Image 1 (cartoon, rainbow, N blue to C red):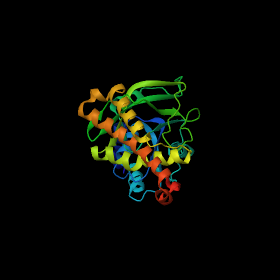
Image 2: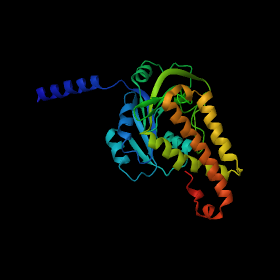
Image 3: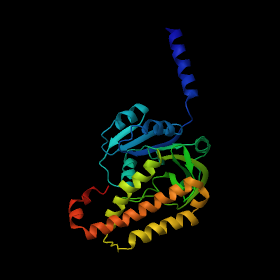
Image 4: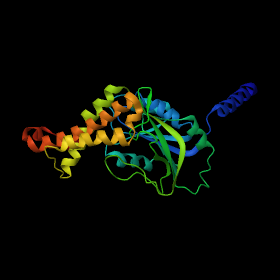
Length: 283
């Protein structure tokens, strides 16, 4: 019996020593049908967090089960919009500091090391902005403003948080420091997704938001915005230096801009299309 207790104690010590160093940080993730991403995201966060809170938007796949098995605390909430949904997690966290990731994002070893060696009790900052590496497949796209894509993701939630907006929410950079450490973002699995999502999802959402806000398009609006987006991203934001991938990314951004205003114009010109569009499902 003594031998078994001693063995169990030693085994516990060995496991504790082999576990990653964790801080009093809560990882937060929002999900919708992310069963292929969420386990690796939770595992990545647990390298530095002593808990991970997942807010799931009523997934119809196995996201909840996979996240729970990976060690996360999972709560469900019908999707309310980007910033609002992320802030839902704050009512469930136990720590002052939070680290927010999307399900398709991971921490780099350099970032893990920086977090482990930071004293969050004495830091004068309320948050830290991290660079984001955006990938299409296994290729890192750096042009068109995709890198360095600084975002505040590690912050004190009593002083900073996501704004209560439905689209493109970002935490304020007030009293924050930029770290030269990266988050890996597996943004699209292939070029097909790079073009399909702007065409199918983002442009429709953008057009609906513009319409609901009372914006109006003219016959030349799609061409003006599409060409403008191409010129800005290719020549000013460095797409020209990104080779074929830079050109591909620039065309995808331009397509999204063109389609957003083409769809807005269609809402104005075609009563039948407008009648069949569900503006209650913008999000």
